[in-house]
Amino acid sequence: MKVLKFGGTSVGSVESLLNVKDIVESISEPTVVVVSALGGLTDKLIATANMAASGNPAFREEMEAISLRHFNIISNTVKEAKRADTINKVSQLLSELQKIFEGLALIRDLSERTLCVVVSYGERMSSHIVAAMIEGATRHDSLEFIKTEKWFGKDIADQKLTSTLISKEFANPFNKAIVPGFISTDRDSGAITNLGRGGSDFTAALIAAALDAEILEIWTDVDGFMTADPRIIPEAEVVPFMSFIESMELCTFGAKVIYPPTIYPVFHKNIPIKILNTFNPTAPGTLITDNQLDNKFPIKGVSTLRNTTIFTLTGIDDDRMSEISTRTLNALARHGIKIFLLNHDDSPNEYSFGVAGADADITARQLLSEFAPELSTASISAPIRKDSLSTIAMVGENMKERSRLAGRIWHTLNRDGIIVEAYSAGNSDTTITYVVDADKADRALELIHGLVFHE
Image (cartoon, rainbow, N blue to C red; front, side):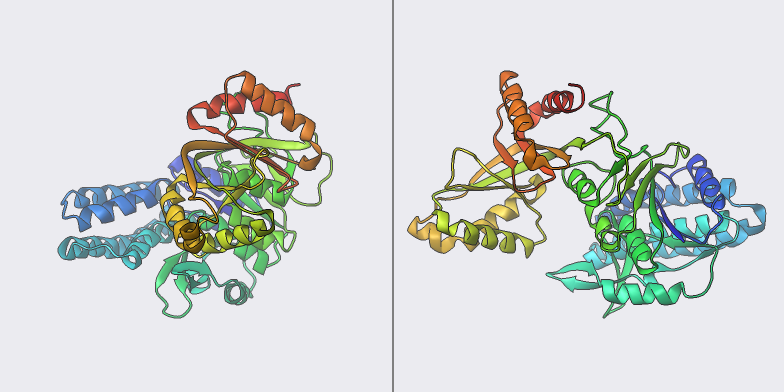
């Protein structure tokens, strides 16, 4: 049994949807197909909801465009025998959505809960279309079996309950099961929630893990993981194999192929993931597994995390470094902020870490709150913050053994006038990171990629 996930670009047009149809119908074994909303629709729904809540009557024109897009796709992808029924199902959802927008225009308020309801319509509509389009397919409503719970004010998957419900949902034999990704419901209230960014990938991974699938295939618009962003490095190559940890590290540091939390449910069951291209289905793609065979890429790739902010705490005694690190991690985790660790080799009494630029302000507030006692007595210095940076990560096997290469990269960057603001080697056996000014990031990526893959 396989689980396939098709993202927004894969279900964004008549052409791509017909590719999806061919791919799914060519599989002879039972298959669960998880689909995103039509490409770009989630952003459109959010923008239209905000437009309605602000009293801008143009939301009705946007709603009309959304409707026409779905009807056009149905007319060109669904066979006539199922077309009227599909139009009816999608029309009912569009009518509900229209009423929500009209209500927002009246009350002039858009709550987080209402926005969750609004964006859910994208996947609900696309899954009806795909289910009608594919021969022998049945639709299964993920609102019934993907459950979330509140954790520090955020909706996170209740994986134990979700796994139980998935097993029940798919207990009977099926051929092609179509599931809307991303959307979920709260386990206690039943309110519509979602799994956040990368939620459709996560839906697919939860299903694959619960059903012990043989593989999870992520169908997207690229041929697989590449050694670097081909828009910047035209000579970048597809990496045929990599480990779960390597794929997570590359995605954490900017490779937008899959969303890192996707990997955890299948990682724990050692279910391989394959990245494939909906627009080039014969390409071999990238296989993510810890059971690797031949691999010509000991270093898998170089990726860039844009808009990074670095914070540094100074004046820390060596015997307190572990305590400071733990308190920082806990304080930020309570607000859902993910950090990566960095070191200044020549400053042993410093603790440095990076966060996404979007999280920088709340990070600064949390540091001042957490370390208020130490700051008041000057036992540690006020946090130093540096914005407008980019983090470049080199990911691969046995990175702790590559100190020689790491040193060559450092000197090469310096010779080119690129100052390394922070550096990390040794915190992870799979990743070495360099932090540089944002306007130097592309050049740094070129230099590092050249040293790693072309010398």
